[in-house]
Image 1 (cartoon, rainbow, N blue to C red):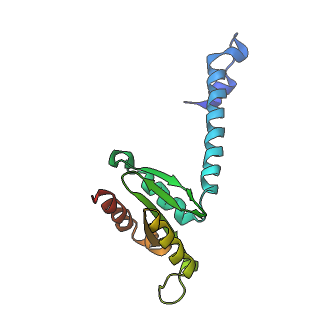
Image 2: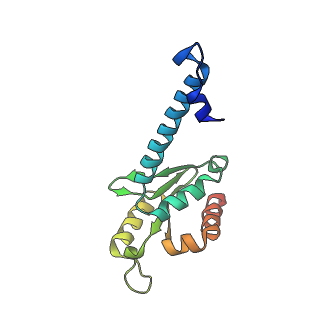
Length: 149
């Protein structure tokens, strides 16, 4: 566990020392993790999307027969998240730009949702403020849809 000790450690084997190789391997793993974290963050349009994605990853969706895919492209549309399994489910995290007056959806979203429904998708839209304030309820809404036959 002590990286500093391993780096300072010297023995007759030099760079072929097990401790030196362990440090090198550890450093490469950490570098890869940072790269993957950066790439993962790039996939999301907002911190709220990233937050919900991480919450959904905590659930073993594969046991329910579903795979969670961020930013899946369906024809000309990019879904925030797709859940693929018995059903095709699009989960959308909607910021303020997705409503015009008193919660009414914008026309582009209505057209998009209609297109996806015709393609066999179930579309779930959650306002960002609800995702953050009622996370457990949002996750349960998603799980309930997965469990419906």
